[in-house]
Image 1 (cartoon, helix red, strand yellow):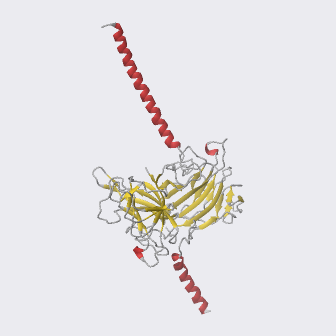
Image 2 (image 1 turned 90 degrees about the vertical axis):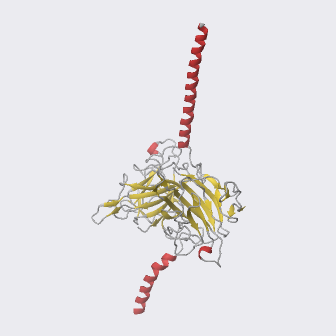
Image 3 (image 1 turned 180 degrees about the vertical axis):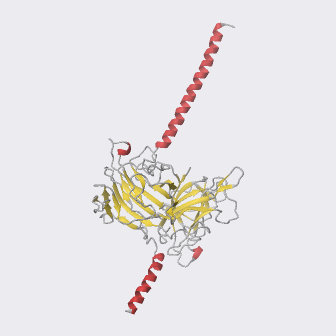
Length: 225
Length: 246
């Protein structure tokens, strides 16, 4: 009995130390070992609809496609790095906000817009915009029907003991590898956020805006604050 | 004075005005269409990875964009083969000069199993002249310090060790902002850098208060060249491009 307790105690001590030494990469793989894989192309086990029902977006050929409402991760995150890939349908007959609209909500609150803005538009409502807050530095869209990526570096807002905000949230974003936001301060949540208490970690939410947008290869690295 | 001469003179003045206004109109149209073009010119046509506003510094074929460091036009001595270039023959730097920029560089480190510390596949990427170094080293599996791979040399260790093993291609994506000076030459903002190593964030808007080779070096006031270091190790580079940032 004592031996088991000592063994478990030793194991607990050893685990954090060994985790720090584990390399993030073994070879040329693209996902670092400290990432939480949120979608591996096979199932939606990490996701639910906003009312808690299991997410039922279409899953096929390694991607998921919007269906039946917004979905959110079961896990919640504060400071983090996020990688996400998306694919926009070509909707020639639609325009403006009707053209392949979706969005990625960080901490359930801060939307990075997804839209077919190829060839025009770089306002905060266009693709890559932090909706209603910050326009992308450049339009870095690929044409519709091509896989695109966001690499996001997020710092959650900071609050003191009394619940007063002492630092705004901040975002840096690469769109298809191109810098579109650099350490942008976010004074408030964007429209349609679901997080009530921004002092706490929140889920990643993907928007169903009624257009058949696809996602794949989603991973997140929680960051030390 | 004969009437026809007055008449001709009047016509000439009108012609001058007409030609001038046509020229102004044409010029305005050209400038407007250029502005519109630059706003709407897509950065990507399909799945290519290099955006259209990037300057390709090395495409795997030749070092025409590079010269020996310290020279204006002494051809770069590094060998080019199989789509990469190998450090050897002294540092090289770009012909063009840059200040604020996004820089993509891929590198490959030889396995130098009999070496340790700074002797193990050492090289470096320097921004805005031989002034701000992001370190290249085989630090695979090490607890990263200020001299390890991805460090802003001697100033900031990387947030995490995001190295791949030696003999594997790796990448830096660097976002650099030059130090800013007022009209009297007083520094009003330090240099800043964000860096991803292999797609992992290792520096986040890091404050770089001095040059990295030495804190006593004068900091650059003007755009300057990007430098690749030859530290005596056969480190390889490929796929190098840069986008000036506003």
